[in-house]
Length: 229
Image (tube, rainbow, N blue to C red; front, side, top):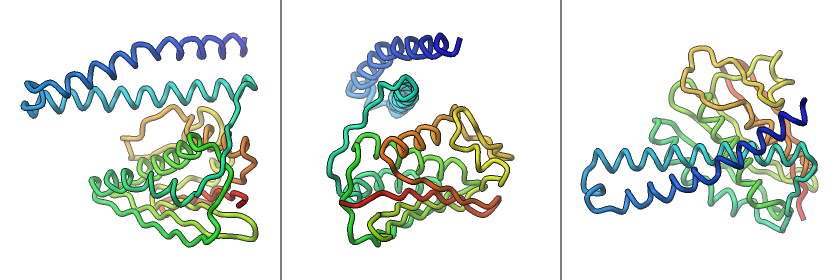
């Protein structure tokens, strides 16, 4: 039954890819139309269609990747990367989002040795997932700090927020599939409980160590330790 369920989910999400792609192309055509671009209301609706379509596509991709991981057909394609270069490409877009919410994002890139072996796509997905969580689980304006530092022959990437925190009894389960922490009076948190499961799976596939430290109503900190080359 478990295998049938996995096959069904895998096939269903594959079927989503064609309409998602069609919606993306159509929304881009709408946004380029002079009549729509000159109308603020219509332009905003077209933008919402594109943004939400991208969100749906990201969720479908996540499910497909997780299905591959569980089937054993998942392969990471590692290559030499500079972690700071990857972070510098990701951070500006996140900073804009944080600032729009009235928050702050601080970066402390202290590591001197930053060359690692990693799959660039999945590394960016891991970073985006962690930063997205840091934003979502903030009560009001998010306050996020991203730090890198060298420890022995490794590089640590640390992402810390000052959000709602995670109860001790839940901390051992947050990396489990479909598990979601209670958000109390934070009502805008959306998702399927797959983000941290995906993050953990990618770290395990790379042979990286990932640790969580959190206190309720104070902070949550995720630390990933990656060997340097």
